[in-house]
Length: 97
Image (cartoon, rainbow, N blue to C red; front, side, top):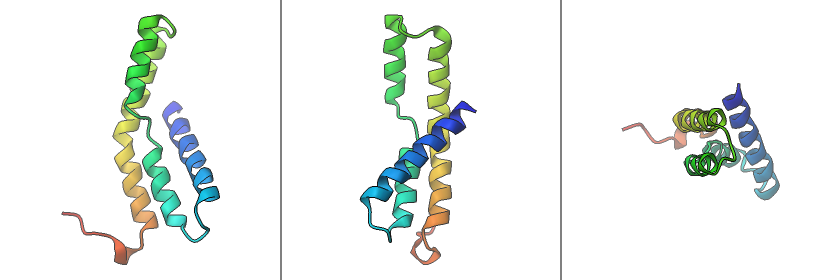
């Protein structure tokens, strides 16, 4: 639940920001870039460990940060692949090697 909410909110926010920046004809670029930005970065590990060491967050919250970050990193390639299959025209796709 938490991971789905995190992924979808980051994805939607990226699409909205890119919609304001990019020209209207670049819909596929918005989707691809948003799929790449939807993951939680590895820096969350560093921030979580520092916050735990400083006593800002509890052990349970730290473990939640670790699990959400790990799942996010594992699911990012799946989201990227789904976005490329949906947004890139078939003629432009590179074959898998």
